[in-house]
Length: 122
Length: 275
Image (tube, rainbow over all chains, first blue to last red; front, top):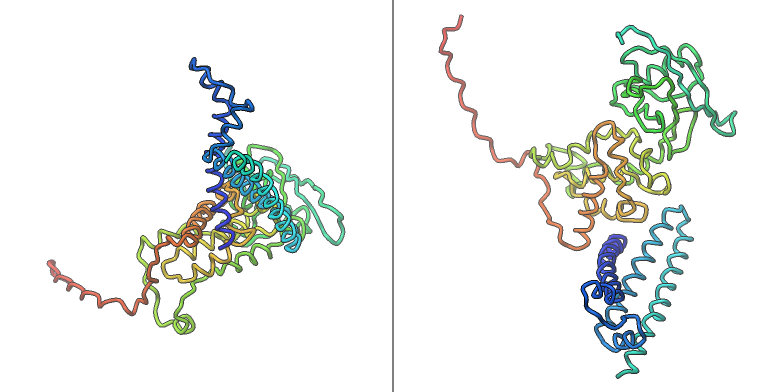
């Protein structure tokens, strides 16, 4: 049932990425959105604002989750596309290994920055 | 147009003889047609009167055997099931079914279709081996249980669904809508106990999860079967099995274990005097 679990995870991560990405985009554009309503807030993309969010555990969790779910969803989707290119089983195994390694490396790199920032604050 | 009126239609037929040709080419034939003439009748006219070397498959001539599937004006049809009037054109382009190698002219190689079909175990699988080897009675099936899969039994294995499928076009190892539809047909059969075996087969790479759900298979099917629906229902079953939320039902009982039927009511005596 390996493929079934992968496909179910693909669907779940797709939905989660949509929600987390919506939160991210809304926050990044909050000055514009709230500005339309006549509420003035400090720019969410300023250094101070970014650092403030980086020091909040909930935001660190949101960004690491977005990275993890996004990486899984994108790389598993990419593997599904490669499956249709009629590669041999051995070539597909090698590519799958490369995709997993790529995902793990980028997950470690991507989580390092927010965790390091969060740890430095505490 | 009266039924006797004759019109001339140009058949542009793809020819390919692997012993002579390096690649397929087209040849044109003028065919006299009248109201109700089918594409197959046009091809038979060519074979009998214009070029006996033209190769195509045909058998029942009534949309039952599934032999004469071909690409007519770039869409998969059964030649015997398609009347020339449908196209409102003076020219018709005929090609063999795509997504399959060509043997000759309009004859595709169907081995892959049948291999994929066999791979999903398209037969009733039961735990009681003794009964399977030497059947003593039929299995009981209620009408609503039959309705679960009835439409999928109408598949004639013509290959039109595979010819229409965009995934089959790009992924040569894809099981295809025909085989996946038949996998569902047997999984949904109340007499069957082979779901787990088939789920293991269809959940591998190039199978049920690789369908793009274009639903071109269902549109092309000449028998009204909906393989796209079967694939979605198969996915539902496989996912339920993986998540352990699938309801387990007892397999159908042998007809011999039925309780004794009530005795029939006696036929009333005739009220009119018999001669």
